[in-house]
Length: 181
Image (cartoon, rainbow, N blue to C red):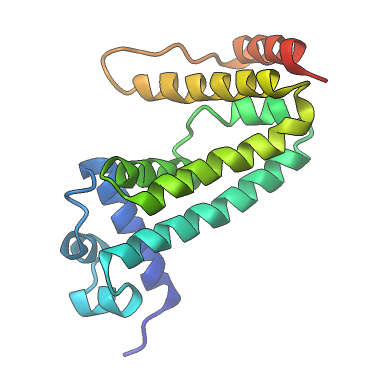
């Protein structure tokens, strides 16, 4: 029986969802196979181990980061504005894989931690030419971190302030004024 290429992505989607919804301990090989609707043999055809599943998610992150960096560096509104706007989670594929890999890192995965450091370094490298110095760059990065964190708070009982519309425009103008070359 041939296995369509989509089966591999379905398994990764299931593993990613398990990590996000239930955490690293619940994201077992058996649970991923069940959630993807494939047999254990079908899962093993694509991923021989949990480490291989984790590597598959990191490959997904790498691909999505390449797409994000391309969008960031060609954004008509500018790199910093795009970066800050995209720091507010939209539950898009990049957001989802970042959360899933964060769960792996929290569970002690060195490769997941390294992948997250790599993400940060890629964003810093893309933003750096638009910041007047390293302190300005860190201001942009920390505002991005704060937007992301506060957006995460919106799902719980403590709402986080996430600027939208004119408020976001004003925040971006303030950051640009403080950081631009």
